Length: 398
Image 1 (cartoon, rainbow, N blue to C red):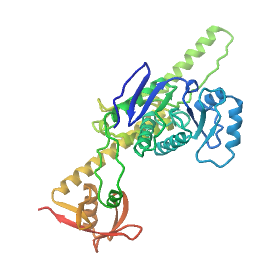
Image 2: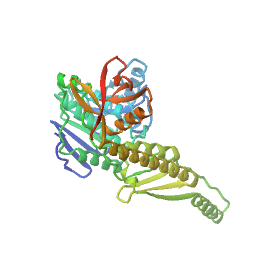
Image 3: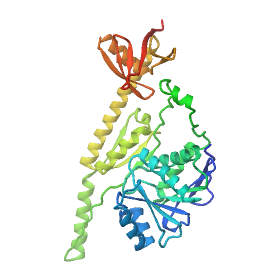
Image 4: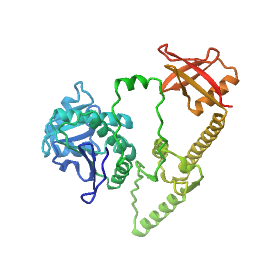
C-alpha cells in the first residue's frame, strides 16, 4: 500500500511505500548525510551544470578526477565514486534521462545498486527537472513508481529511506500532489505465470485517463540582458524607459476559453511543456474555468495559441469519434475468440472494423492487449507478426 502523506517538518513530506519511507524535502543535497547521494549527470559524468556541478564542487577535485576517468570506460548508465568531502559513504552518478519511463527505469536500477552497497538511506535530486527540463509532475510520478516497483518486486531488503531533495522550492508541491494522488492506493501485484500467459490476449481493464491538474509553465525562458551606458543619469533613465516601453509593446497576453479544455488529460502535459519550451512563453492552465492563459512575445504567444487551438480541435474530433463509437455499440459489436471465449474489442476499434467492413477493404491493423494484429476481413482472422491468429466475429445486438 501507499501510506498516508504526512508533513513532519516545514518543507518535508513523506509517505510509506510498503516498508520503505519515501520523503521529499527542500534543501541542498550536498548537505545530506545519507549512505548514498545520487547525482544526475551526462554520458561521460562530467556535467558542470545544476545539481551535478553542485555535487562535484562540494565533493572536491578527487571526485571530479574519478568521474573523468570512469566516464571514459564502459558503464551501465551509472558509476560509483568515493564521497570526497561529502558526508555520505558513496556517490552514485547516473546518466540523466528526459523520458519519464526511462527516469523510472534508471531510478529502479540505482536503487538495486544501492542495495548491493548495503545502503539504508539514499538521497536523489529531482532527476531530469534541471538540464533535462522534464516537468516536475512527470518526474514525481516516475520516481514514485520506481520506488513502488522496487518494493513490489521484493528487492528492498536494506533500504529504509528514499529521499528526493529539491533545490527549487515551488517544485515540492508537484511531488506533494503526486504523493496525495497515490495515497492509500493498493500497489500493483506481481502476475503469476498463468496470469502472464492469459494476458497475451485477454483484454485488461483500462483505467480512465487521469484529468490534467492546474499548472503554470514558465521554465527555461532565456533572459535577454541589456547593458546601458549614457553620458548622464537622465539619458540613462530615458533610454531605460524607452526600452521598457518597447518590450511591453511587444508583449501580449491571450486567454483561450473552451469547454473542452477541462477535458485535457495528463498525456497532454508533455505537449504543453514542449510548446512552452519551444516558443519561450508563459502558460497557465486552469481546468476549473476551462481556460489556458498564454503570455509572451506577441508572435510567439500567437503561435502558441494556434497550437493549443489545434489541440482543442483534435480533442473535439476524438470526442465526436467516441460518441459515434458509443452509438454503434448499441447495435453492433466486434469480438475476437481466444480459448473458446469471445472478448469484445473496445468501441473505437469496433467502429473502425465496421467502417472497413462496409468499405470492403481487405485488411486493417488493430491492437489486441497491446499487440499489433492485421485483420483479414474476408477470412475474419487477425494475425500478429509471429503468425499467431485469432478469429474475429461481428455480432448484431438486435
